[in-house]
Image: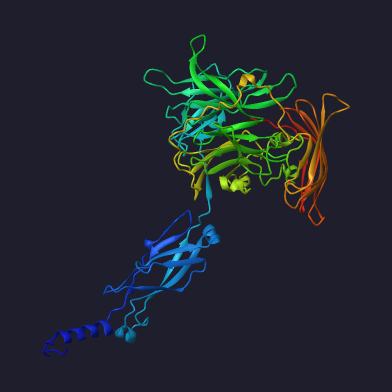
Length: 640
């Protein structure tokens, strides 16, 4: 309206003018995108945010993606302008930059914008996104040590995140001659060093090591002292208002047969009441020598002189022929390593044993040597000590088949590398439980390029975002160090369940009733393959030595793995204690078309129970991959 013109005097005129204003002079929407509104879900990789469009008149807006992202897809909520960017599975793992362009309109006619605005009243915005990789990753920190200690080993975390470990007292980094190894507590940055065991239990002259804090809030610490008869267990008790700090010995339960080694790898349950260990027993009737995985209850009492001690009572054998390495976080199962091919000929893998039922479930899945396992606080991730990718056992294991005969060579293969002084059989890996089930290797937490090899076993912190273990120099086993591994995109720290009481395994036999027996095998007879054919097992007395047993398996078009057809024989000659094994093999592998895709040949002797040796060769080929195990054992190096 011109200045001074008379005002409209009727409602209809006002209505017409309003229509004209809204139609020809309506202002278009604007976009003011703020990258700070975006966030990424680190489990899925999905990024969410808001386009940031507004309309001066509050008109409803319509959004349109005019240039789609290259590495994913995007959707926009038409009511709110919120967008959801979903990366492809591969891009979520690798991460990187991506973008999309969006236009927005209020679906009105904008005369002025049409005449004078480059976007004609339909603004657009390119939204740049930075996708952070959701793949689990690690970073390593070498722990700084003060010069008052040296040779650190076997670390673990306290509940509040400090480090517990064994070490030797030193002056300026040089070990004090004849000093006992002690138990230390320290911050991760090397400050706050405190010797927990110094001055305590002077009657224990063997070095103390392997500390593990109780999780029951008592402040107690499980420790061990290594001696010629194995590992003696003890428990550190902190000072109270009425008592001084002390180290109280653990008294193992009595067995019904001779004990070769009494201790070996004590582990305490999350409830602080139960304990496991691995005594090695001798069956005098057969000569069989095996570790028996034992679960019992800790009872604090006094000896005849009134000195405190912890006795292990109601000791029961919950597994045989392996080694317990810990509990699940809820205390309801134990984790045990099997060395006698329970998962396949020549394999060593870990299992969960349900303490309430005795049910056994495979936990790790590797064709190479695998020994120690520690489970994350939420039970979804594992640290795995293994030689996977080194192929120490794959000459025996890559042609997957059941253990029909007692070809127990894993222990000797382990000792062959351990005694060389550059033991790489127990490198620490990080893997999810699902990854293990799928046979994936996981993420290496070690770095051989630094000149150090990692040692068992990894220990989790309470938050599930750090793991600690120790390493030794590849050329000097006495040069050791502690490594803290920091985890990214690893969801491992859900709090442990409140109820961590371990059930009593009433199904398991009492330790004092157990005499070691040979591992259970399928036994003589004809065994059908999963996908066809048969494996015929026989067992006879060795005519040259009636004390020995000849076990033979003959394959007739036997298929355990689909598409791998086995023909040929494997044979062992064993003494009653399985301390001497002669293993021979001549097996051909073909595919369903009749073409040879592999073979297995062997003539090797595995001798000795504790100082094991290999003499001979095992060679296998499968789909072009050839692997070999050979002896004799290298000259032993000085070990810790």
